[in-house]
Image (cartoon, rainbow, N blue to C red; front, side):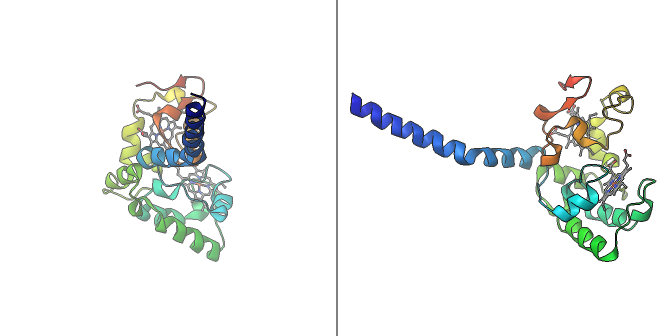
Amino acid sequence: MKKLSAITMVLLVGIFGINTACSDDDWEDRIRYSTGVKLLENPVYKKECGDCHMAYHPGLLPAASWQKLMAGLEDHFDDNAELDKELAQQITQFLLDNSADKSDYRRSRHFRNMAREKVVIRITELPYFIHEHDEIPARLVSGNKEVNSFSHCNACHKKAEQASFREHDIFIPGYGKWDD
Ligand code: HEC
Ligand code: HEC
């Protein structure tokens, strides 16, 4: 009896030990794969493009959109976001290499497949984005001081910075969890 429970203990510790050691990251990755986009670390990009808003993940826009956006930084939505040439080139390359066109993550596939008609430089103007957000009333977005506009993904998607957009992690300030 004593021997058996000792073995059981060792087995349990083994199973749970291994699980907690590696499953968290795997789990997050799997969620991202189906409800988000690829998470990439790029400190230069984060520094240059993550000051005024969250550094939008490259997998949220098709390559043609990134190209067009990066070619017009001096007039960037009424702001000046111009960078020196070398830096701009480096960031453009990073965005093109990892754009929605290059990713097989499910949300990237949606963003690119529904974007064939014309080149927009806003994620929020992509047909797939509009399709996913058209039931949210304006009072929760433009009429909501804690959100202001759809461009602030991380105001509602609590794991937007980690590239995860699943419904479970949506919380609209002043409204709460989203159940559709
Ligand atoms: C000086 C501030 C500033 C900097 C720096 C900046 N942006 Fe922006 N960006 C803005 C503003 C303002 C908007 C419009 C937000 C809104 O409409 O609420 C915007 C919007 C965007 C959007 C469209 C979001 C949407 O609505 O779908 C993208 C994409 C974007 N920026 C990418 C970048 C990239 C890439 C860089 C770095 C090269 C960058 N931004 C640097 C101010 C900035
Ligand atoms: C005002 C809050 C709000 C903002 C801001 C917002 N979203 Fe959402 N988003 C939602 C809600 C609510 C849903 C779920 C809609 C539904 O399924 O009915 C959603 C759904 C999504 C989905 C689909 C998720 C899934 O797996 O079904 C994606 C992807 C997404 N949003 C990306 C973005 C991105 C990228 C931005 C910023 C450019 C953004 N959202 C800004 C509220 C928001």
